[in-house]
Image (cartoon, rainbow, N blue to C red; front, side):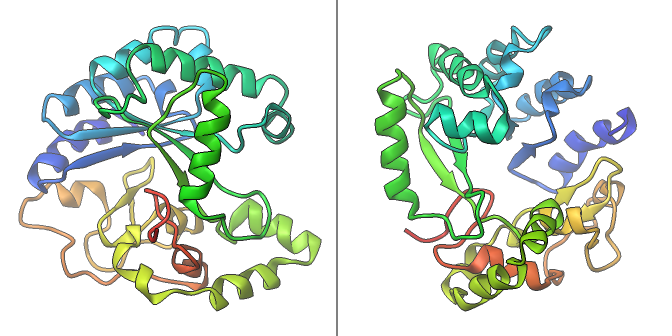
Length: 269
């Protein structure tokens, strides 16, 4: 995202009276404008979420990143596919589990993950198989027990369903299980999840400033409905997204299946 678009973000947040800025990547912290943007938005009193991969905290030149996030009271949401070193390294590469632990310990030392949630630290789990996530509360207890033995604390575990799109869909198709997984999602549809799906209150912005109803629609190139299509459109206080229809497709069953899945984890207990 270029500087002109970055400069629009605080303006849009103010004019649209938004309450949260959720930053994701790749590794959003590597963007040269990341720290300036976080500083500006924190001064507005708006919640900032950093979707952090933890290993970034030990990258050369990022040694002070954890301190910066704590200083600006940034909520950290970090992917942690398992509490087992063997499973994590098999999925992410040799040494990733140990580097992730070191990142978590650094965040804990600054107050992240404390019970008072002054500096919230949440972990994310999503299965790497074509199955629904297990009950979030049960798995969270497992994570807290196992990571607690390693001296790690965190606030919440967020369980997310894998969407049958892009790389995951191609992998399932190669194995001949794509249609079976899609059928599982559709048969597990729970209408009680509909009020809480993330597309009802979140807007996804790509690196060019284009607007989408969610990250998954962004990955599929399914642009938002209506005349408001770009970040610059939202800089006009007379324009807003209230009442606009949400663009849906077959993959949306991934958010409504079972206990539900959203950027904030399961939708049902």
